[in-house]
Length: 348
Image (cartoon, rainbow, N blue to C red; front, side):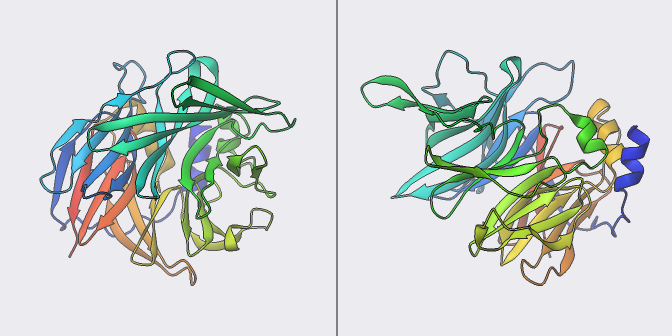
């Protein structure tokens, strides 16, 4: 079965950009996603880390990496609930509203099969928990820290609201809603991914009157980002970057470009930066054995024409299974799914 997956997703590897100077910055294991926190005079990356290899010591933290000197440290989290809470961060986004900045994370509480969105206020000294949005088969729930009242929970009572089943990445929309990719119909149904079944969707939540999911399903949606009001998603098993014009979730998405094994999306210089895993079989082997190299590719894609170029490519020697790329000036930062560092790359 793994061989089928590997053959189904293979693409020609691009020429490696081995000549670019690089620097490793040690963080926690499994730095799968990151955001640039450049609000209120801060200059740092916030890196979402979770140990994803079996048999390893647990580690689930948000790390802060200075853009000035590369120093990295765990960023404290405060005010999280005690009951039914387990911190295992995945996709991440950061946004500003009325002079304040907020971090939103996909979170996986596997013990209770509870997959949710966590929101935090971002300050220089740490992250302050604000809310958790989750769902079961009948309802959406939002529990939050009510000022001077302790915790409260709101319930969306409409049936059929089960739109959080296997969240992957998250982003804030221009109108203040939270959107996320739901990669599988249920968490752990990897057969759907194996055979490229169109069972995933993109969900949206703003309040109990404004929640929905995309009308058309796709094969393992992964990264997502807004650009000029259009919503873009990558599809790891459909091997395409797709666009929802105007963010309209009822439309059939348009193909923008091919990206085999596409992962997270960021926006830089009017281009979509999409990481891609071109050798799925090596990706799976790398999860089991860190010594196995999994190639890393970063595409820069024009959001309208779909023109695609290779911004960075490596055979896995410098970084394996790169999952997010952030460009700041001529410096590219890459995080990855499994190993315990991010990579700083000096572009020409």
